[in-house]
Length: 70
Image (tube, rainbow, N blue to C red; front, side, top):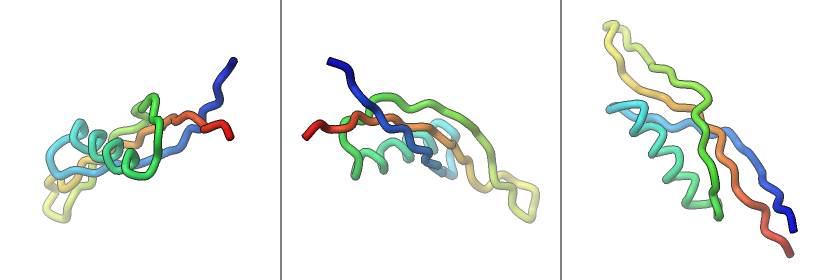
């Protein structure tokens, strides 16, 4: 029997690194979504402050999770 998955976009942020931003996104989403399967990094960017310094790392991920059958 086949399976059906839904894919959503989430953005995690961190003052430390892109890696930490991705971990934040997955751990937060795992708090409300069950049966997470795959996280695919779609985009990495940074927020630059007025002083020209990096302020925030951001990681946009596509998360997939399995639909539950009734």
